[in-house]
Image (cartoon, rainbow, N blue to C red; front, side, top):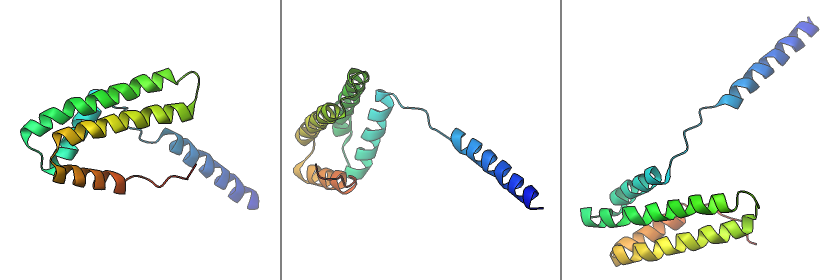
Length: 124
């Protein structure tokens, strides 16, 4: 009886782990899809005009294309610190471009929402 229970438990564990491996992974989005998603998100969050929406889409597209380039650049040498600093510079450039497109009130709201959703990181 004990042996039957243990074998049932082991079989169940194997089945559960096999299903957990598959998961429901979403397809990786390309830079255009990401830029479109972010444009829609910030258009609704900040109540942007159609002109402002048209201006921020290329900003996000440039950022995500740059991220793909950075990822491919550091794919072989695995220098995570340099990759982090490269992406940080790209985000800063995006923020400065957004500041030129948005009104001061909109940019303040954008910055608040962006920083409140940022995960807490360990200090270096």
